[in-house]
Figure 1: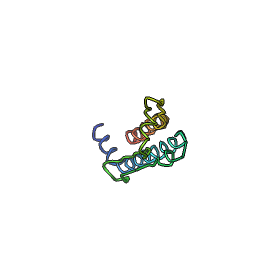
Figure 2: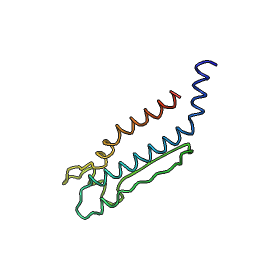
Figure 3: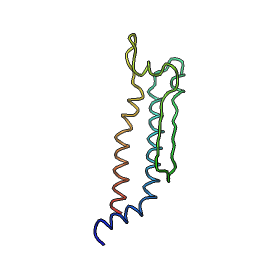
Figure 4: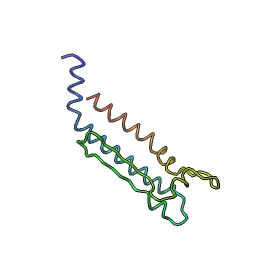
Length: 117
């Protein structure tokens, strides 16, 4: 058995674990981004903050795992991006930027565990 065959066997054996770990990682990142988005959202009436929700799709055996979070009020883009009268307040960008390094660090660990066997 050559190195390529061993790698293929490792990948086959690690597939279920990889799926579970990827599921957990995306779920964590989605929830964490929503939490930080709510914490950083400007509050005037509370509607913007309370409209921030998370949507997660894909079980541990799914081919695609997705997570989406953000506000759902008519004016959210104006607050986030600003207007001619109001400076931008990119609260969701700040939340995503805070989660991104940890997301990539977790992804590296997951892939490393599969490749290391």
